[in-house]
Length: 108
Image (tube, rainbow, N blue to C red; front, side, top):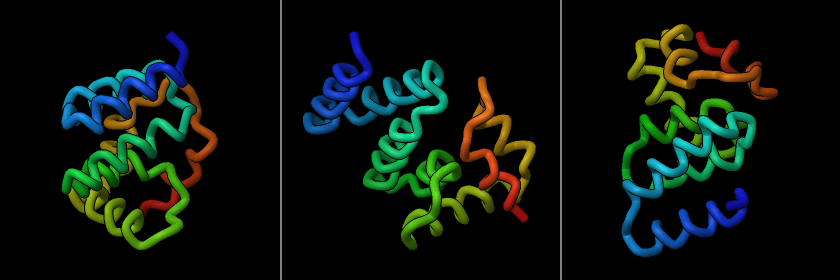
C-alpha cells in the first residue's frame, strides 16, 4: 500500500471518529518514514484538535513555528519535559538526521 493510500485510510478513520487508531497508524508511519514532515504535522494536528497540546508540541517541534498555536504547543511540550534536549531526542527517536534538526538545537 502506498503512502498516499495509507494517508487516505487515516483520513477515513479520523472522519469516522477512530482517532486513536489513526494516531497509532501515524506513529507507525513516522517510524517507517522519519523524514516525512507531513506525517509529523498530521499527527500534531490530530493531537491539537483532540486537546492534547503537549503531544501536538512533540510532533510540531521539528516544524517552523509559523503560527501561535504551534509555538504554544511546542512551549507546553518543552516545559513538560523540563526543557531537556536529551529527553526530547529520546522521545522523537531519530533513525536518520532530520533536515529540521536545527530547531532542536534552539531549545534553551
